[in-house]
Length: 424
Image 1 (cartoon, rainbow, N blue to C red):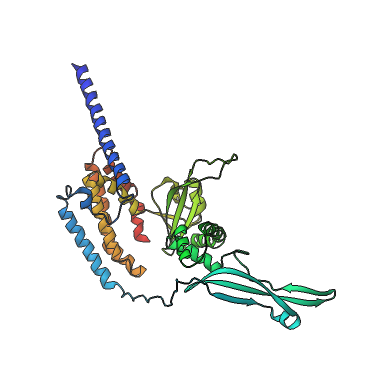
Image 2: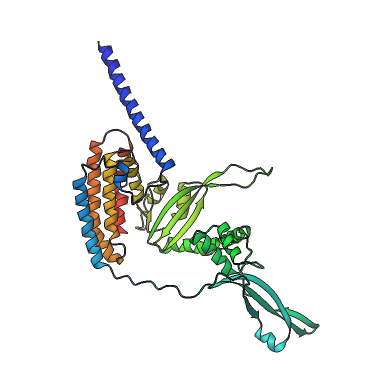
């Protein structure tokens, strides 16, 4: 009889384990279907009603009413303190994009001293495709040549030309700058830009564009971009960073065969909301993170990846300076989003609370920093404190290992870092 009870207990435990496995596999299937057939990432404006089809909101009306009241109070004070926005002036100037015969811009480079002491015998001409406000043109540079008398007879002397980023290049620096702006700022692909130029009777193929973009990237990366990184490490107050994986096509093998793509990582750093910098890493490791941000002494906002732990192990004992890690509410929200996709009430409530925080904070976005921080402590801090109190309570009533407990665990473990948003 005792043996039968033991086997029954073992069967119950095994059945519970199998049920939990089936539930987790079902949830994993739901997430995979969303990533295949739905939005590739969660959207911050996604309504909880869209995720649950109204099935889980019946018991959340009172919570939503309280959150709406808190957001309304924050928005009211934010609107009262918001400075009036001046209307932006429309850009002046006329652009004529229908040109077929490009105008010529003549620049003569002479030497004042040789104009008096020597004899000008001609010019050396070179042409570059140039972009100016209004359209494209051809820059004609005429460099003067002089015959200068010396102890051994006359010799020909040319005038030194100004330094160039691309020596003897087809494109003027202004054209390269316009190309880079179209590609990386406005998102215009090279093939489409090539079509636009053909409409203006300009023959510039995408291969040439790629070569110039690569050369400009190498030159700027080693000079201006590196100087921006150095300035960010020494002068910035807040840097937000995240890493994204990317497939990289390696060079051909020695036998000229193509090799399989390898995975690299691009780190994005938003510096004081003024500049966006990028760094490529072959491996997502602590060593690379330490080399990239090791000298930074301000607030670094990142996800909860273990590679950043090396930065937060504390400064040396003889100094108070060091880096301060700040949590990312977007990453926290992602876990509750996945739980809501699988119809967990915890996921829905978490999204509701985080959405209220975003709405309250948005009311202060355009205010001066000092006033924004004061209003954050008055209106945003209570919402955050309520959120973490709710997390503690929800953990005690949410059993098992699933997406809901994973979201609650992430929020609890990152509490200290997430609350540091109020300090920035």
